Image (cartoon, rainbow, N blue to C red; front, side, top):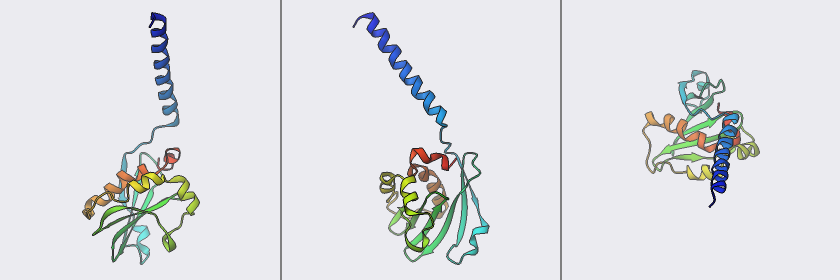
Length: 157
């Protein structure tokens, strides 16, 4: 390679990297720090044993988590106005499931648009055994952002 070609290649690579970084930062990076707090207001339902709020970053839009105890294990229904899933923790392990039937409140077409179906499938079995109750909310808060398609991550922040 000639010196001019090498200089051009280096400049092109640097400008591409810098341009991509500037574009990504203009979109605003997702803040994955979270806070979990108990939510006593939602426990008025006979189907809900406990409830919590998960807040990512400095958001004022919490993701709500409702514990529903069933024969097959604990179901943690996770929802906001744009999507909903449930994490099941029982003898068959810990993983995510779609919500169907009477538990469903978010329209299915909106849910499918916001959630990444590949990530949803990859989280069906996060653990092959039951997770300790004290760890479940931390696991949900950690794994949930991966389910949301990149163009909708701002829903969480």
